[in-house]
Length: 197
Image: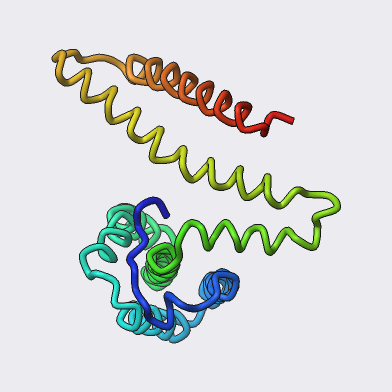
């Protein structure tokens, strides 16, 4: 979801976030449990139509689906040899459609809308759960993903600039230390805003 939102005014963009979450879950459940290739083929065609309706950039959409294709290059032959090529093809179809649906959701829904949807879902349980705090937790989690990714990138760039080689541990230690410093600074900022209780 980080930085993937593609602004637009399509029906897909304007659909309520909770409805999109429900339909996403329902579709993934349907294709995950159906052994019928026609169901998966129909789902794939529907996802393609939804992408056209949403008018998201083709390159951005392809970039979201491409990583699963690399995984399938290894997984499909293994599955085909172990369980048969029909089952391998069904598995590949299910994964591609599920990833494409998730990509469509993230590209047509803002992070703010997702947070508000979480708060709405948790509202009936407000006696037991503080929906605002859960929303804050989700927001912080979403924010920290690119923060940690930036830390990893900077550590790798620093190692490359120094021309040093080393083990995974030599990358992990500075990443963990810098992440802890960032978490400490974030905690102090929350305390300064009265969110320490």
